[in-house]
Length: 588
Image (cartoon, rainbow, N blue to C red; front, side, top):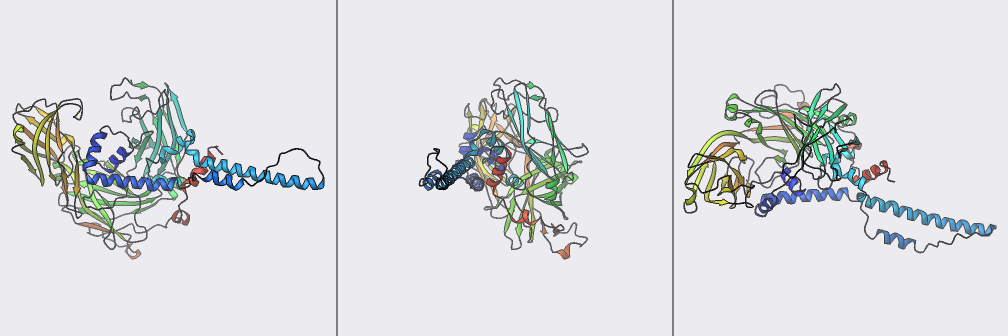
């Protein structure tokens, strides 16, 4: 099994959409890299949890208040003659009763604040985008600046209820929290499937033009985390979310849940005015063509409440496209990092260097309007705003046709291991067994090729490998087991396949006389690049011309006025915001 990405690890920690949990547990037990990632995510979640729930009252609060009030006398309210002297006594007694009433009311209010997460209606609203198991720092910032909007969509048909309580947008992305409840009142997490042909949710601008489609990012158990990324920052002050939902899919596990047809369509606007005010866009310059035929162009840096987004384009030469036919070229990944003026790392993306720093929140890969052109974006928690830093291009991965193979007698591997060696990858084939369920990836019997070794190139997708037996029958190969990556620099490092790593061959029922293992596609790793870009240049560099195409460029040149001081210098307490929101919901 290959190492988990950050998104996959978050899904595992939130128990969302992960079926092979025991396999991942075994992988974590053996993989130090994934364990470090897991620990880092747990620490990050706890840090935000502490910030979110910092105002929780101590258990001793009630006892302390009652102790402070125990000496107060509450006299029985029996009627007495109104003499001047008795009048003064009555006023004193009423003053005491009033203070006791205020104290009790204060206790009730404060205890209400401490326990409002247990109130079902409020908790359901609050948790949708800001649950402790789904901490998106960009969303927390959006909440602080009042950019989260509440469309209050609730549609019921055929016994199923669709709800949308929260949505948030900036010029680069839209996020919608959608919940779907079945006739039994339980959340249906897998019934809504968005596609071009079936149900879909569109984003339209002020002129009604479709500018995006929402898709489910997963990573949550109790709502659909729907996102649309825009390849270009939108300029509209108002957008419309239009849901065209006409059916709910049946389950893929054949448990008897049929397709349900109905009408759960909806639409609601999102006001972008404040989000546009809090957004600062800086056009970037800089272009580089690698020896392997990939051209990278910096486009823009967008500073917004939800984070900092770097946008760039890549374009492949005709020769490079020939090596990555079909849609292989669209599966490319870039390797880069940011460093300060002293050369210290700020963030890194797709590095094998250990240790490394990563504050990447989201990324998007969108194919352009011609073959070979990709629009890429990466949103970070932050990037330096008032000090120089550097973008450094470290390389890239791109799937290419391969065809490398090795033939062997599987029954003899334990005594005579065989090696698959190609393009810097070195895999030892050390054994072969036939495995039966439940010790398989599914319900089929599987041939299991036991391997270990090291990879220079990237992880392969399951459909990149195939096996052919002695009779010419071909099988798809999948990978399973623990692995880790190690490197001391930005361009070195190998992926190490641990002792339990396996190539699984579903449908292979017996041990054939010979097997030919074929790698149809290699996820080729290129590091023969040399390009860096100076960011946050000095003002005298603003009007320099002729910079495009050179090795060092100036970007993010502070061409715009910074955010207002209120937005720049202060972070409101989230608990205070939630309290205000509770009042707005009418609970106080």
